[in-house]
Each structure stands twice: as structure tokens, then as C-alpha cells.
Length: 497
Ligand code: NAD
Image (cartoon, rainbow, N blue to C red):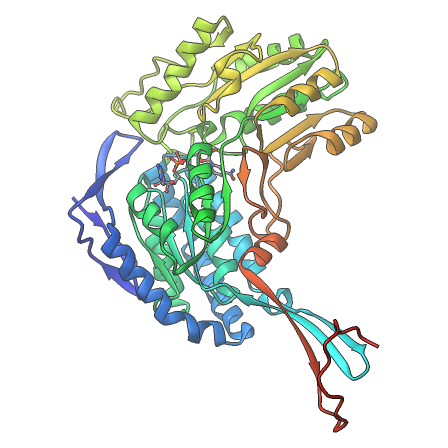
């Protein structure tokens, strides 16, 4: 059985803690590897490695840091399919979907290649007589990233390219469910010419995360995962003086207005609800059907959900792969049982699916609930599986209220031909990412990604301009050159004249 270890100071380092986690192939249910789970001593080792590398890396001109990032971009282009294969083998999503996720991560690398431009400050000539002032952004020090299972290549790439290009050292703690991509990306960064210790990968669970959160040598924590853990990371990290951005869970709504193109809306819902088996933080899990759109939408969705092709992620015919683990499979199935108990109408039941030759895999078919109401737990809680709930509302205002009353506010979308409704929705919806006839409005790398309400703790979204701000601190210099005229000590508040 192979062991997935750590990547510290430019090379693989064997785990010393004696604790290991299990990595499975979700398509077959077979164990594929042990993953080392770090303890506090190993966290200390990785921090020392980053600390040692920091001064020289921070002093490296941004243009040279950008060149390393450019080389990394070329290597990810060359080896992107290997990364995607690792995603499929450990996460289970289809290979083409995994390729797409690597491509979206690569866009952040492309963005980070522009770091010399992004770090340009502001300059004011003559803020006073003979006095000039300028601002610049400097790296923070050692930054750490803690990432979820659902995007083992893309989500780390939301973080480390910007952090490292900005002059920081970075420690990645990937999900212990699918840890291989983290190590592979670290190897590619080293091949790209990154000095040892600038990018490290430490595998582990809550013990490793808590050691990172409380260590005074870590300046910033970027987290993506479930809301309960995001809140813990935010409060603990902030209490220990760190800058924290912690992205949490979601329950994304898509409003379908009666004037929408319903065929297009149904297409959009199929991809957004069932792509990656619903294990996406931007998955649409609630369709809010307004007025007489409801029956027509449900009529279109029902046969399509029932006909979803479920199979192993490496079969090109599969539209949807298995869920990530047996525990997650049981959790999602439990929610379907619960929805039935709560009185929602299960139009398509994906439980009980068995695939010949893959009986041990964690497969669920597509599930479609109608007549879901806001008091039900299947409406309130994040299921994170292939389950779409249809909520019926009478008009735009009540549909918008539903979106705004929900505790999560990651993404929200509207399908309509009415520009007024679309504009009103974009302005008033309390979510961080809005789609107008776009079901999964994930911003491009040069914009920033993040939600509102309990989908994000902290003041900064990820990558794009907010990413650069998060990973740097501002300094403002005010400078005067001596003119030979002594003015003596001044005891009043200086005012520029
Ligand atoms: P998770 O919260 O279980 O794990 C995320 C990370 O936190 C992992 O690295 C894990 O090792 C660590 N962790 C788990 N429990 C911990 C604890 N008690 N203390 C400290 N660290 C702990 O999330 P997951 O199941 O891997 O991922 C799915 C979740 O991530 C979903 O809720 C999904 O919505 C969310 N997600 C959000 C976004 C977003 O952008 N908002 C993106 C992707 C995923």
C-alpha cells in the first residue's frame, strides 16, 4: 500500500507521527493509499523550513518571482492531465470535469504571472513642500492554506500562486481524503525553479490545522471547507493574531421566472445540480420555480434526472461519478430519507443504484425533490450531493426573500428575459456571486471569489484583486530630503504646507 507523505524544504519527507489516514478510490471502494497525518513536531519542521526561505524569497524581485510562476504555468499545462487523473482517482469526479477544474486553477496561475503589475503602488508628488509620499505592498511572511476534498487541485491554486508570487512562503494542508495533487503541484513548483522551503505541503487532519492556527510564526490562513470548520478557523486564527479568509458551505438558489427560456433553465440546472455529483460549493441545490414555471420545469427535469449516466469517473460515458467516501455517501443518502420523512415529494429516487463490476463504489443516482418548503432540513442544510430541491414561489419578491433569508450566501442565480427583474436581483440578492442566466457564476481569476453571510468569514474574497490585498500588507512612505535649513523641533501636529 503506497504512503502519501509530506513535501518539506523541496523534497518528500516521511511522516513521523505514526498516525495515518485512509485514501480510497471512490469508484471501487478500494483503499488506494495511506496518508501521513502530521503532528505538532512536523508542523514545527515545516514552519522552520518556510521561515528559513522567507527573507530571500521576499527580496527576490517580483519579475523573477513571476518567471517561476510562468514556468509553473507551462508545467501545469504539460502535466494537467496527470493532475486531473489524480483528482478522478481520489475524488471520483469525471475526468473531463477534473480537467476543467485544473484549467480553472491554472487561470489563477496566469493571473499571478502579472504580479509585478499587481504589486505596483501609488505615488504622490509633493504632498507638502519638498515632501513626497508613496505606498507599496509587501509580503506577510508565512501563509498557510487548508483546503477541502472537492477541488484538490483548483482550490489550492486559488491560494498559493498569488501568495507565493507576492513574496510569501506557503504551507498547504490539503484534504486528507484526496491528498496526492498537493504533493504533485509542489514537485512541479520545484521543477519550475522555486527555492526550497517556499512551498511546502503538510498532510494531516484537525491536529495539523490547529497547530497552524495557533502558531505565532504563521501570518495568514486561507481556508475553504464546511461552515462549522470555517468558523472555527476564523475565530481561532483571528484570536491568534492572524489574517484569516475562511470560505464555508453553501446552498445556492436559482430562481426560474415564468418568462425564462425553460429548456435553457433545465439544461443549466442539470449541469449545476448534478455536475461533480453535486459536490461543488457553487452547485445549485435549490431551484426556485416562480408561478407557472414550476410544472413546466419539473416536467422537463424529471426524465433527465432519471436518465443521468452514473459511472466511474474514468469512463468517458459517465456524466456523474461516485461520492467521495462511504461516510459522505451515507450522509447524502440520509438526507434523501429525511426529505421523504419531511414530506417533500421525491420525484426521482437515486438510492439503491448498483453498478455491475463496481458494487463497492459510492454511487448514487440523481435525486429530484418537488414541493420542498423552507422549514425542512433538506432545504436549510447543505447536502453536498446529487440532490436538487424544487421550491415553488408565487412571485419574484417571495423568491428573492427566500434567497435572502437563507443563512448561506455563496452564489445565487436568476433565469429570466426581464432585464428589470435581473437588475433588481443583482442589486438586492445577499450572495457574493450572482448569475443572470448563468447558473454557476464562478468569477474568473482576475476577479475575486467569495460568498456572503455564513459562506465566508473574514474580509477578503480569494484570488483576483482581493487575493493580492489579502497576501500583502500596505506600507506608506513619506519622504523629505534635507534642504539644509534647520527648522528646530516642532511640538504641534505636523500639517503639510
Ligand atoms: P471540511 O470542513 O470537512 O474540511 C476542510 C478542511 O478542514 C480539510 O483540510 C480538513 O482536514 C480540515 N478539517 C476538518 N475538520 C477540522 C476541524 N475540526 N478542525 C480543523 N480542521 C479541520 O470540508 P470538506 O468536507 O473537505 O469539503 C466540503 C465543504 O467545503 C462543503 O461544505 C463545501 O461547501 C465547502 N466548500 C466551500 C467552498 C467555497 O468556496 N465557499 C469551496 C469548496 C468547498
